[in-house]
Image (cartoon, rainbow, N blue to C red; front, side, top):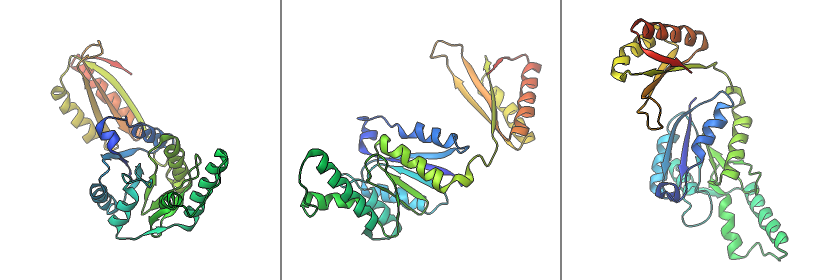
Length: 261
């Protein structure tokens, strides 16, 4: 199974806010021996979100979606998920209780009386309307839940809420996937070489050691360093070491200038 990430919000695409979810999700997955396979950003447009979800629901990936599950007019993710699955939105009974509990708590903290049947509180209950059959993701910050449906896990856009909710999903539902596949990586900086010159070596290494992938990250020296290529191998530990040794041997044979990391 592969993991994917969808980040929803016009504020990200307009630059008003900088996305923080991508790097954090990579970190949370890596801590469990997992990796992110893809990520997408989409604005607050219901049909576009629904189209994205139709495509991802049709696959086998485990997907986290951050943002757009509130109850204001610019929140469309709950409705888009339901439309993508051809399901109605339904008020989740436990979700309703959690939202009402949060309303009552906020009123107590403010020293106010509260009428749960008031229009504004009925509007807040929409935060517990999910595609029929969805299950809840607990929110340790304020109790307003996210939801899970069809291997997709929907959480708020606020990092303080989203990140512990994603951790809960991983630890509750996918612990059997943790550290299942051993992984190793070795790399070096190669100076004074072009990627095109190194490509035959990279192809030969991957052909010979089928359990590894070769990577190259060129730098033009924008940080004041020498122009270089970060060249390395990653994959099955038993093959990474000999593949890296073979790569070094070939670079030494041609007299290339390199430095191991």
